[in-house]
Length: 451
Ligand code: MG
Image (cartoon, rainbow, N blue to C red; front, side, top):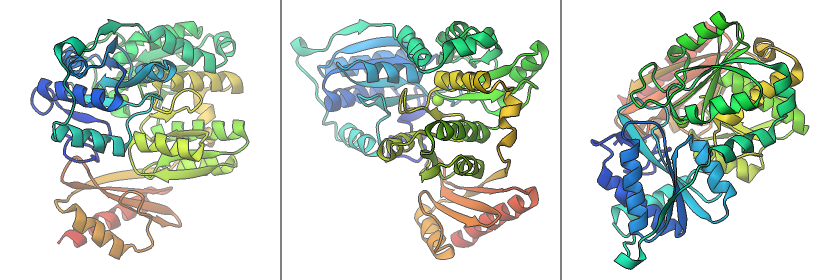
């Protein structure tokens, strides 16, 4: 089973993930449906991304939920945040399930549970789900008490929910020319319409749902969006926008056709929110670039760091009453809308900021400090030994997630992976040579501890 920093045997930081029909099976999906029905005990919303195996898993989840006596509202193919927003707004919905493997390659799928306020399940809720699943102590009801299934369309509610939060007239006035790359994912059913309703001239590429992902890998990183960058240049567009497979993330290309690093977008939006609020807290994982903290501090705000993973970012935002939060992968969280990553909200706020400041995207990011961030993987079979060794090697480090060691001119982060038998080493500095030196230092420390 493929997991990312998991709660245990089954759940990772993003629910249960694995290769369809190998690691994640229909039988598992049925029982996971029973688990959430047992825990939530009310009508559950179920949605899915555009993957080939998603209708199969969605049917299995619905069978499981109804067999445990709960009713299901089937939302069909939707972005993950659209389902989350629906669950948040509908007071009579007890929770949600999304069938999605987000940015993972096409053979994967996943099942993620949603709380009644639209947030993802927290780590402790996933642990409880896993206990219920493994001990098979979920409910199965008698024939006359099985749940009902009905369908609803939540796309309009989601699009209008986003539009309510931004200044539509201000954006529409600019008649932005936008190239949108949905990566053939679930964003294709909402983002093109949203852009049209924001008055943009929208050129769509890869913008029909296709679970074979024929044009690019669903992760919207720089290496995968070369065609988008080319299209922005060719069309002389104002901006390029790319989604991941379930459209909770958005990455951006500026009007010159240059990819804007995810951390830089996070810093730009965080700074904007802090300025607007006259201060406030921004929540982000320890792996985010220092440029976020620099921008937030300059605007008079404060950064609170969390372990890596979006549920813990949302949980911390709620606790700290944060004005903004997000991950350095294009997953931005707008608390006035939803305590979860939201691709449609991201693109709308970026367009609004361009309109408000009357600036091109490349001009907006000019003031964000740039750092060189390097990453490496080192084989690591003994995570406990690594963590113990790190405590001895760096007693003054920050142990929020692995060990983060701060220097005057940079930092190193060493974390054991939850997915694979490796340690992830990150290093950052303003100078490339210093970043490389710090990375080497991190790699050597891991090797020394493990020998
Ligand atoms: Mg995603």
